[in-house]
Image 1 (cartoon, one colour):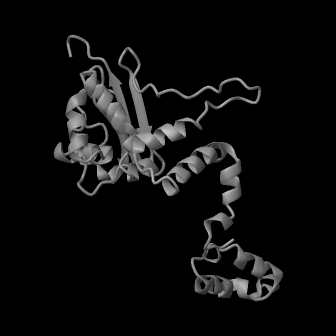
Image 2 (spheres, rainbow, N blue to C red):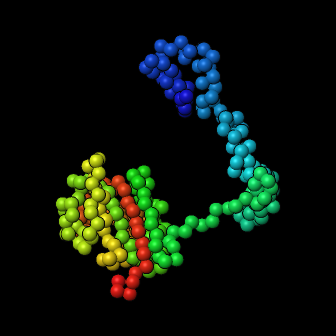
Image 3 (cartoon, rainbow, N blue to C red):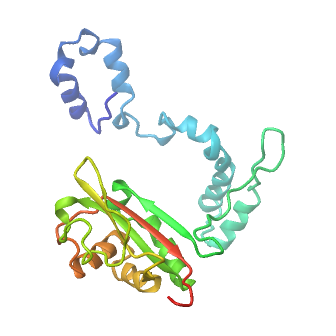
Length: 248
């Protein structure tokens, strides 16, 4: 099913490739007319949008209908724009969710980033890394607040590293073997509880300086310490935290 923003774009879709030779998609056929009627550019009124019914009748969308209706009425007819007053109006129409049996539904609490012993782990893949690994920032910030240490593991192309695999100049004191993968990437770890790791507060400051971009902060540290080339790309990142012992 195509999604066209105007009639011209839809016409080009019908004329493209093998579609123009398919009888059911010829102009004027029932299927072609139905596809045309379902296009976004045909629906100028939001009330006619095909997603309106599911949003207004299912799950969270249905739960917000009464609240939104009352708030919009207050704005449009009463001219109310004060946020606390609008919040009070919304509160009168807000209820705790219930289960099918009528019991109060459980609400997910705040995720535990770090255990009471100081142990915490977070990892991200290529998709999250492309947007800055934002989910790792709270972990690093909490570790910094608690005065913890951290270590991290990165995966890059083998050619992205400056030092050869297992070099002590790359990660001195780390006995963990380098993980080599079939896709010509390597995972290398930096810091450990045995070597003391890194001050979480230092990396929290680096992340703040990078505008919250954890990937950029880790990348900058690796470049500054001459462990990877400047044009290297991190494809996997893992952060580990722990509470330091008196000797560290």
